[in-house]
Structure formats: C-alpha cells, structure tokens
Amino acid sequence: MSHVRPKAGKRRRDKPNCRKGIHLFGPAQEVGGGITRRVCELCSAVSIDLTGAHPMGTPSLDDFTRRPATTRSS
Image (cartoon, rainbow, N blue to C red; front, top):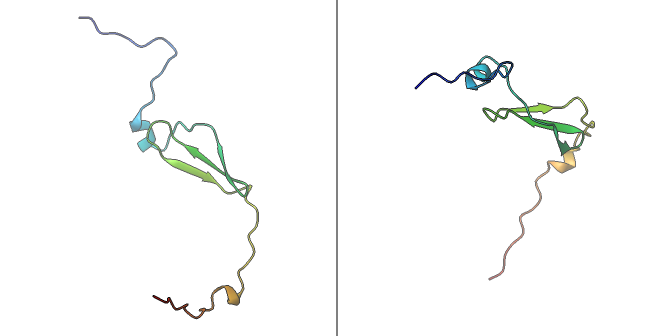
C-alpha cells in the first residue's frame, strides 16, 4: 500500500504543537461579568480572558463575621 499524503496547504496540527504553547482555540464563550473563555479543540486547554471583566467590590467585614449557628429541632 502506498503512503497517502495530506492535501497541499492542509497542515495537520496535533498535540505536540499544544505542548509548545501553540493551541487551536475555538470560539470565545461568554462566561458572565465580561469574562470570556476559549477551549483548545485539540487538548482541551482553557484560556480565560479577564480584560473585559467588570470590577468587583471589596466585601465588608460583616460578610466575614461568624453568624450564630441555628439549632435543629427533631
């Protein structure tokens, strides 16, 4: 059987390229809050873009204070 050559101009990209940091990312998916996520179609590596993220407020100390535990009646 003879060797089958790939079509001219159609270079196959595979996981060794991903190991070099050259990924084949799919379309961007909106996660929420201006954050977008892209997944490599070959190795499933995830790229998260935070450049469009909305600024988050700083939580107050009241958010971290311990609230009394509620008791359960049986």
